[in-house]
Image 1 (spheres, rainbow, N blue to C red):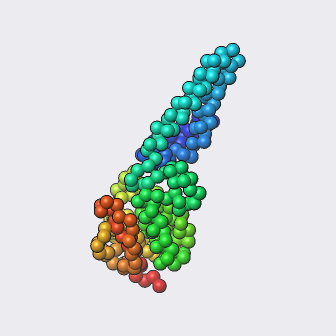
Image 2: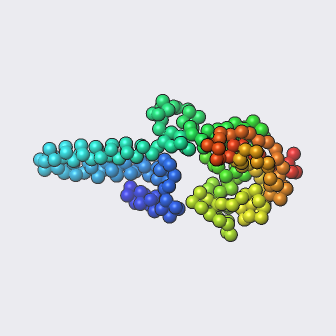
Image 3: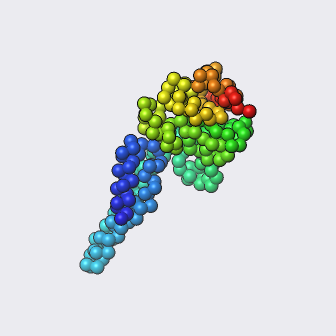
Length: 238
């Protein structure tokens, strides 16, 4: 049964573009089951060898398996830190036990800036269309988030006639002439939010249905990424 669960999740991850994101997030749900399966595959032959009097061989097998397991984990840990996403290792951060303490790196730090910004200027119960779901919605539970990529929105995920990438629906969701933009206009969120480059003046959003409301500076990444978070408000919203 354990093997079937692992195979099913592996097939699902491969069918949905593969487990390409940092942290093995698409496979982590079967991580504990995978660990049990690995331990069982080592313990069973160990027991058989011990019963047949091959103690030295049994010890060699168990020590070798443990060594390989540890080596694989240490080699994989080299990929748990990069310039863009920051550290994924609690040890590197001093074993932080707070949610904010482990959110390091450009993307995660900007998510916290955005969350504080939204909590400060957007009324509780409002809805916001945005593309980055993750830490931001977690720290703004009073907000109704509309995921423009469709990863957390079944209706958007099943849209027809729109472009897709492994991160979900693509296209400018602020432009009413695009498939995703036209759909967002029918959903009528209270606010539209997006990261834009420094000095970029807010464009006409969804055919003028939304007007500039607020903005805040976010962390710059080598002068190549967005440096401001813009928020537009629906015209007829009180």
